[in-house]
Amino acid sequence: MKLGTILFGIIVVFLSGCKEEVPGPNEVLMVHSKFYPVSITIPNGTTVTWRNNETGTYDPTHSVTSDSNIFDSGDLYRDAIFSYTFSTSGTFTYHDNHHREMKGVVVVL
View (cartoon, helix red, strand yellow):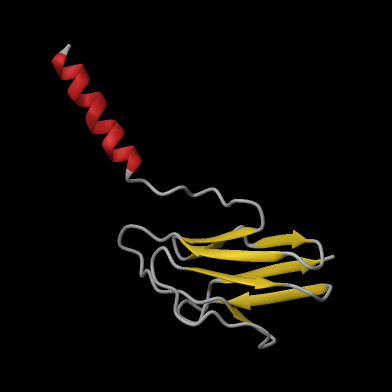
């Protein structure tokens, strides 16, 4: 019985240290050197929040930089967030200046 209790406690402690990898409404995560989701569709006037959710050995520094220069988060370290309110309809592509393979899209209706 004691061994089972100890193992249960270890599992609870381990899981409580794990970060959530499911984005909230109008949220994009930066995890495993990727934007998740890669594409998000929102109504005009909506604020999107990006959250650096990196863990482990991945390089934790990212940015959210518009390909058309309308927004730029600057450096976002682990657990940092950046928000931008989209007030124009259209398709907005963006990338991470630190990991150029990281690309995303916001579609504003």
